Image 1 (cartoon, one colour):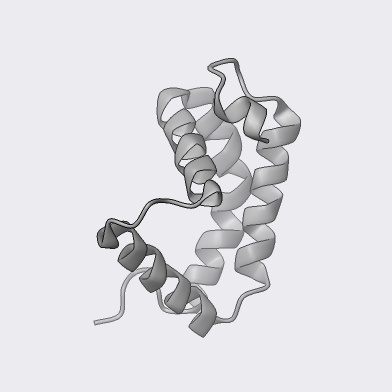
Image 2 (tube, rainbow, N blue to C red):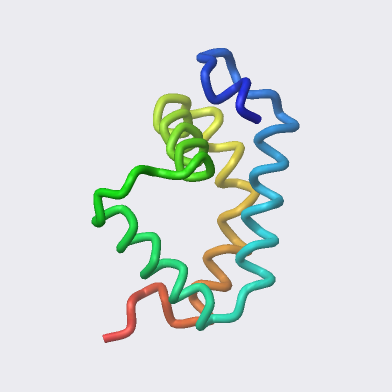
Length: 98
């Protein structure tokens, strides 16, 4: 996975599919409390100024690639949108509860 992180070549479909499946599994296998805590922790880490971990760097690189490649964005979100948003909705995380 680190090889593509430094490349501007198109990501292989297998990499995109693997990241999508891992994302779906993470959300599907997490409790609502775990998801809420994870989202809060992610926000706190981003605000802390601490150096990012390798995982954070790879995630940031993938998000950057999503922003640069509309076809990649379509491919990735077409796989994760329904299961992830359904879980977030069921947990009351979207729309945010007031």
